[in-house]
Image (cartoon, rainbow, N blue to C red; front, side, top):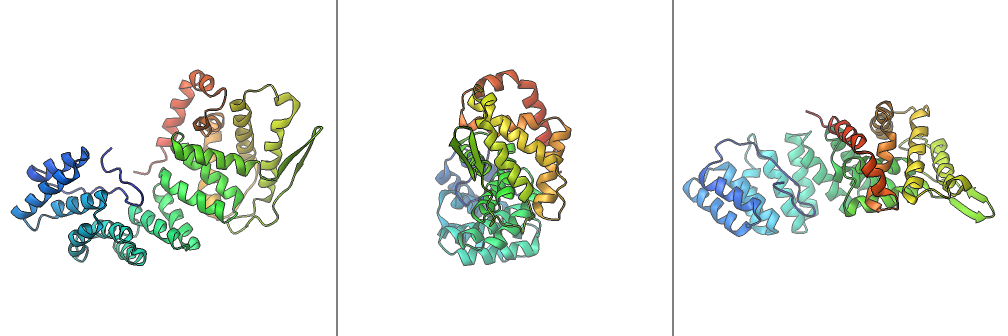
Length: 337
């Protein structure tokens, strides 16, 4: 896919007309990873028409992708100061380049300028949140990510970032559900494996097998409540994870055992009367309740764990092709028009 940028460089789409000639050639070269050649094409387009906004945008984006932040800044800064339909897009690239130069404060100010123009621009919101995270401004970063994900519910990187913050700040239940939202849209790859491991760790937190059939479950009294009081659910999480050690589950394959734990926990979640106004209450819990109505909890429980490669994974995937298709269609419906 075009414009898959690294690190903090986010993806932009500038729907300008007239992408012909040199600019089109430059875009094709960009897509092929030939950044220096693409830059030459965009520069040639600007020599012919210095007012070519699209060529300037593409040039700045290419410099940003290449990591030439100084050139990116000089290219985008003039346009970022001009009022116009695409000013916020230039501000977004400029912010990335400033961040790449180590000027995180400047990047944050630039993203804020862009959001005054386009307050629901998801790229600006996400980039601002990432920069705030780097400054340990956690509370605002979480607030910004919640807004961004409300506008773009299938954004995996947004879920990853918010889940990480919830986890770091000891919002156990909220972190688990956010990680599962991430896995609902990105179940494979290195990040998925990290997130799946974190989710299982959160579920099993406080569970201790003392041998001889004795299992203790300790609930963290300091688990934070600002996102809602999930004490009852967190107790359930521990008890559900502890059930893996029961005699009747010993012969299950590891994948089926872990999948059963996730599914049982989600079934309980959707049956509990958890009321509140927090992001978790209004966004994530309804998502899993809709999955339950669609009879897809078994499927999400499996999909959340496929990246771990546990014994029994392939067998489940091979036997549930239709369920996976149904699930994929459900997730796609979460994309807002």
